[in-house]
Length: 289
Image 1: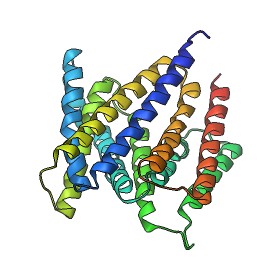
Image 2: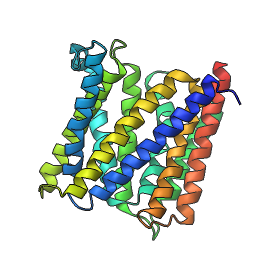
Image 3: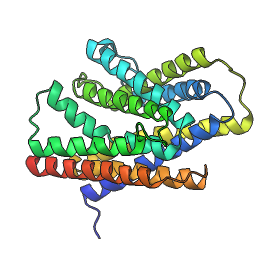
């Protein structure tokens, strides 16, 4: 079968989601030996150095003045919120649940685009968005015996990442992906410093923990690079639904590495969220086609 742009883009997106899932796995594993704040504080400079080197290689300034714009300040605030709370969710809750909740971000982005940018959303899309949020509630189980308040960390992280994505739409177009990568990992470093300042307990990691942190950084950076390639290779409406493969990888790692056993509510809620997201994105593609 010939490799069309859409097929290549879909493969790159799947590879990206696998990379992010491996990053989460290494981060969660490292957080069992050192404070999570210290773990992401160490990862941050590695990402900054990598994307700064990429920017310099392309003749770009790693820290252009555009990063100091008001829009980027808003984006940075959401970035800190998303990275801070999702990192906590990865460390303190099952990786399968945290990843499942994160899959609702496209629904929140569509909702935000309607409320903030005035994009038209028909009653059918509103219904799909609401159903997707029902899926999140099925996973959270508020008021029921299986409810875990720590799962709300992933919800706050989800809102932070969705806000970041919305702010990115208004970011200065002159900023390259490498420069945005620098900004993102600066915010990751800030998030780690905040968590560590509150939790304390910093100590020098063991060699095995260093290996896990380096693995998290390598796969996180690789995932970001693959994501950028995917979005620039195929049609957005075709490539974007493959973001949901991250949930599959997360559940595989949760079961095989951490001994997690997703219950029926988690599986049903995940299916609702993914189904709503795919339908929403498919409908958006048809309108744009």
